[in-house]
Length: 70
Image 1 (cartoon, rainbow, N blue to C red):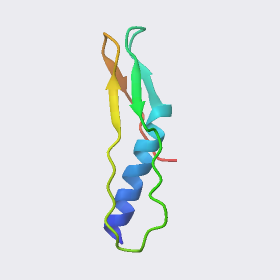
Image 2 (cartoon, rainbow, N blue to C red):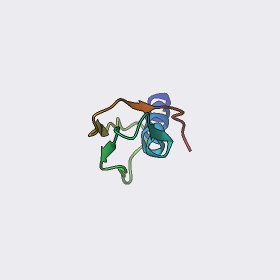
Image 3 (cartoon, rainbow, N blue to C red):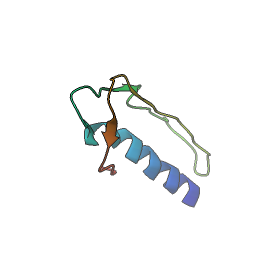
């Protein structure tokens, strides 16, 4: 159960990160592939994993800050 809770919290961080990301300059640009992911119905104790791909498609540094769960 603890592993599921940790994974769930990590998932919440990832899902809310988009709203907490801002460019350091006008030349930084964020691209997030598949901003949301639904695990569907799962059984207790099931190991879950999903990777969110975040890319800076701009030419300057992209700063990610204040990541928190909702």
